[in-house]
Length: 158
Image (cartoon, rainbow, N blue to C red; front, side, top):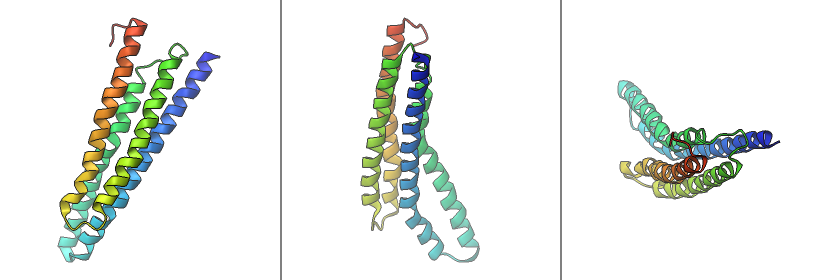
């Protein structure tokens, strides 16, 4: 019985993480579309192709940074067994993931407000700063959870 409950909790945790990741990626792409349109409107010929490649490479780099906090949560979540022996730790993990999701919505709403109507090319740096803060917060909170679980379980891995 607990094994099935633990697996459902893990699926729920993954669902929360993937929802937050999709929100973050959507906000990043929505915020970056202005830069993409500006690069395409202001260039012609070979310069336009170079601007397109540069913009797509920038999206890939920022996208990787955007996804990093959620990949960290998925990685740290694997450290807590989902065999029914650590259900309370799994619930704490879901709470941390839910808090990360709420922080995602808030930080990216602030980021979109910051770049709305901005004329500076550095305004887009908020799309790098927001995931950096999320990564740090996730590492501290979920890392502490894994550490506490390791000590409670008497594991020497942690």
